[in-house]
Structures are given as C-alpha cells and as structure tokens.
Image 1 (cartoon, rainbow, N blue to C red):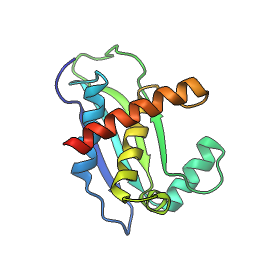
Image 2: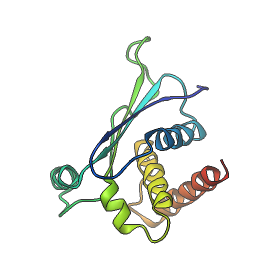
Image 3: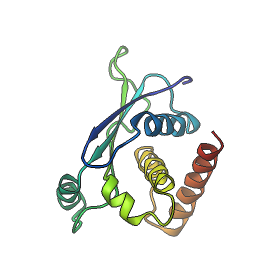
Length: 149
C-alpha cells in the first residue's frame, strides 16, 4: 500500500492546548514509514486524567492514570469490505500525565507517546528485552525523522 493513511485526531480533554494537526501528521508519518498506507484508519485521542485512570484500571489493571494506551483492532491486511478502511485501532494519550513526566521539552515527550502508541497498534511491544530493544530502536528512528521535518 502506498499513500497516506487516515488519522482521526480528537482532543477531548482540558486544560492543555493540543496541536492536533501536528500529532496527527506524526502518527501518519509513522504508519507510512512502517508500511501502512491508504485504506487504513487510526484514531488518536487526547483524554483527561479521570478517563485515563478509569481506562488504565479497566483494561490494564493499573492504578492511576498512565500516559498512553493503545487498542489495536484489525491485525491483518485483509479488508472485510472492499470500500471500507482497515481500522487499525485507537491510541489514547493523557497530556497532563505526559507533561508531568517530561524530562525536558514537553513536545519531545508527546512525540514519543504518539510514536510509542502507534507502534503498539502495529504489534510492537516491550514485554521482553529483545522486543523492548526493537521497539526503542523504532521509536528513536521515527523521532529522529520527526525532528528533521
């Protein structure tokens, strides 16, 4: 597949201002670089602390809010209906948590969370050291390309 996938970006949180176009473009660039193109759709949603806390508890047995959660939907290249997009899944990011954990530039940390979430949608993980090394290398590759653009 070639071309740009569709990235739907929603800002459903306050009080942080989110550059939705910027983060949607980064998510799209990661998808394209990883070989995902036209005919695919990803949702990128920025949510508040309360919602992230509940989702983290419900889906990850976590305590408190987390920075990013990814929910993959379609893990195959098969298209169910020829005229329907391949639904990749949802990446949810909590800007308040991201800002609190940012060691330096908050934009760098947000970029990392976008890339990290998209890579999870595409099947990467960090459960064992080998997977973690592969995912970190992919994150750094995508962040380097983002910084050049």
